[in-house]
Amino acid sequence: MISIQKHLFDIPEDITYLNCAYLSPQLRAVKEAGIKAVAKKSSPWELTASDFFTESEKCRALFAKIMNTDAENVAFIPSVSYGIAVAAANLPINTGDEIVVLEEQFPSNYYAWKAAADRAGASIITISKTGEDCTQSVLEAINDRTAVAAIPNCHWADGTLIDLNAVGSRCRNYGVTLVVDASQSAGVIPIDIKLVQPDFIIMVGYKWLLGPYSFGYMFVNDKHLNGIPLEYNWMARDRSEDFSNLVNYTDAYQPGARRFDVGERSNFVLMPMAIAALNQVYEWGVENIQKTLSILTDEMAERAIEFGLSVRNKNHRAPHILGIQFKDGVPSKLAKSLKRRNIYVSTRGNSIRVAPYLYNTPGDADRLFQTIKESF
Ligand SMILES: Cc1ncc(COP(=O)(O)O)c(C=O)c1O
Image (cartoon, rainbow, N blue to C red; front, side):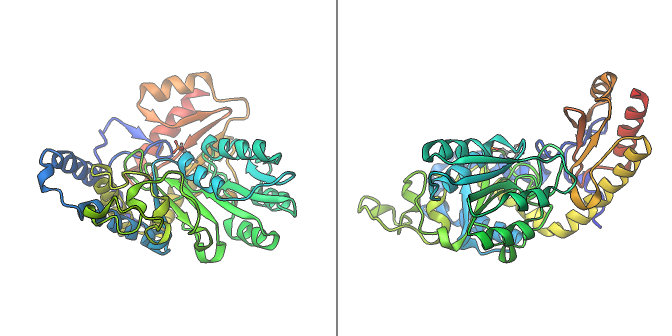
């Protein structure tokens, strides 16, 4: 178990931040890397051609180590919507095909599929997440007609879990492409990529990977490495390191998933921040983060149940996002009291979403449950 890491963040004493699923607070190390990086542009004469490549390769390798995959399979994306658009542009979707999505999944993993389905005369099959075992519902929806399963492994609104090992196996049996939005799990829930064999895993970097906004990652399976990128940026082309040769245009790409990198991926401000964040996540270790956060959410789940509130069963909920459901709706007083006491959670329908991280203390949970108790 990892001890409380609040000293590495700038979180004032009177703030109880239980909303890492929204945006992570910034590590001090990430902020410092960003400030240094901003200053660098004041002296562009110090920037060499290799600077356009070295930091990105460092970041790619570090991310690959965290995901336990190969750097050759990693691309940089600015957003999940961008990554999903890459995936959708590289998958054949035909008339009569079905695309499986989960009810109320994040819209960035919906609109591109809706557009692709409309173009092809295919249909979107939406899996309800009201049953206890969502994985079973996803498995049952995948059949001969399914072209793509485009799902999260952890639902953004309440932490509902999907077992990717089971879904990956089912997808392989039916020849279905698996696209995973791991924005709410990467950095906390390890994915066994060799076992699951997903086609694409796409994620933001600014939540549980603690990085800056507008800087995300995409894992691309070997079988798609010859695919078409969304844009035709020069840096993704073969020998782009040689600035004197850029206008000897070439059809050849840089190796691996680099062809899918967003334009200007060297991003001199965000890249060093992302590296600082990934370094810290790697140092803690994803499995240790998972264990530590699951102890926190298990304790909160027990307290919620004592108050007569409901949470998803431990086997079907994420270790770091707890949806606490109020049978008769979230008490009207609660939102105001939380705000007054600087307690940050998200309210969604009849539930509140509590998403703690390593900076949270036992006092944070006490303040939340004291406030809930007083709101009845
Ligand atoms: C599951 C999930 N996917 C994606 C995003 C963000 O998508 P985008 O990067 O397209 O803004 C969020 C933001 O909350 C999210 O929760």
